[in-house]
Image 1 (cartoon, rainbow, N blue to C red):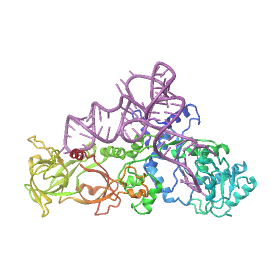
Image 2 (cartoon, rainbow, N blue to C red; image 1 turned 90 degrees about the vertical axis):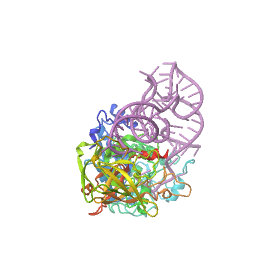
Image 3 (cartoon, rainbow, N blue to C red; image 1 turned 120 degrees about the horizontal axis):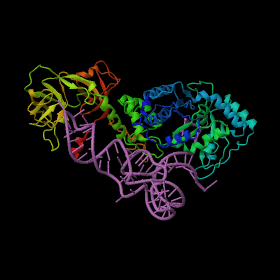
Image 4 (spheres, chains in turn green, orange; image 1 turned 180 degrees about the vertical axis):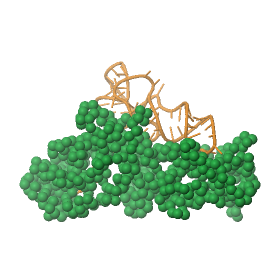
Length: 563
RNA sequence: AGGGAUGUGGCCAAGUGGUUAAGGCACCGGUUUUUGGGUCCGGCACUCGCAGGUUCGAGUCCUGCCAUCCCUGCCA
């Protein structure tokens, strides 16, 4: 659990929500309680935007010694599924949070909600409307003009009661009637123009089955659910600001305990789509392999990609919480995962694009097992043995026949270090008929075993390498941004967000890894030296280890070259 | 007769009228290094959307303007 985070040097960043809570605590508004909730609708998998909300709600409750509930907002049975409620629980737990025994469903409150609707009718504050959906839309008016009252608005309380009971009993077809709150058809806030409270849906609910054929709307359900659970601070995103008057209206009219709704800006990430509707479309139309495709911004996708929950929590801490909407750069997320993995991922050498190197003066058939440090950032990670033989692979891009000025790696006649191995000098370049370099003949300095020359001479580069004979061939999946433009939500006329999909978002190559990877298990994270961080994927089999690339290392030499 | 919000460096973001406007990411120098990674050190907003005003003093208060986002589901 993440509660030891509240130390002096790792104190939560102040934000407007904490300021509000501090004031409420000072005025004893809620008897010193802080009680939040994370209320997803189980209509899709959670994504990194939800992680912000989860960390906020659970984080605030931990910091103030309060409570945070998990509540499924399951009022629309046609969109919801148990698959989603299961995945949501798994993801929240993985992120490191615990709701104890406080997992609720809005559907737990369907009976109470129904009774509250009856109360509203009895107070003359709600009525059954026979208008069609289309008519209701027309009567609502628009942004500039007030709405008109429905001809059914002034039915008697008795008639409304009778009709609403009949709605519940299933006497009417979907869409033929709704229950509406009687507020103000001329309100400048469209949400207050007699919002629908209950609609008829003859649909099977994933928890209540066929018990109900009428289902309450979000606005009616959410405030009452918060009230029932004695929530103090109901944190939600900015688009609900206009709903707050309605949130308050229901609770005031029903004379119920009233939490306060506080809105914050939702997360936007560059190159990333964070809309459940669009993510669902990506899954349904098979643009990705599923909700947990490592390219997806879902928590399960990010997890499979190799991100740690710690890095996600760090990220949500760093982006802060405010009311101004903006787009956070992906580079910030990447820096969080690099920072974490740099400390915990064991290093390993792997060649993704091999170039054969023959050490001409090395004895045939001999293997020298060299010591390699598992993690220079963590001495306790220990060492391992790496086999060195006459035939090796190095990265193709680590050799250039005609090196530019700032290129320090292997070139004809040049000496470099093979990490944890020997100094080698390139003596000869072998090419195929097309003039492409296919092999290097090098000589090694036996005295430089381990990577240092006793005469003290220096080399300007250290390369990663692997013994051709011992290399384990693995499937390496490299991911680029799923979307090619910085803000894939901004769509040009006549196009959809799918037009921004990056066709090169997945690139699968054979990697040649040190034998040590054979000991790896699914989920294990490694740094391939000088390349990036990779995690073993669950698609791995007995004889094929599959790696997902989590993130690349910072690659500054490319920038140097571009100058 | 529209309403609700928001504007602080390239990106987030502290700042709640009073010393030279935190911090992170990015970027740029340099240091160290058996990863062109990492580390460490240094640099990076005479100015807070713009224009006025109040005040001894304004990013913080007032007025006006501009820009952006959200709202016309029987979705949440």
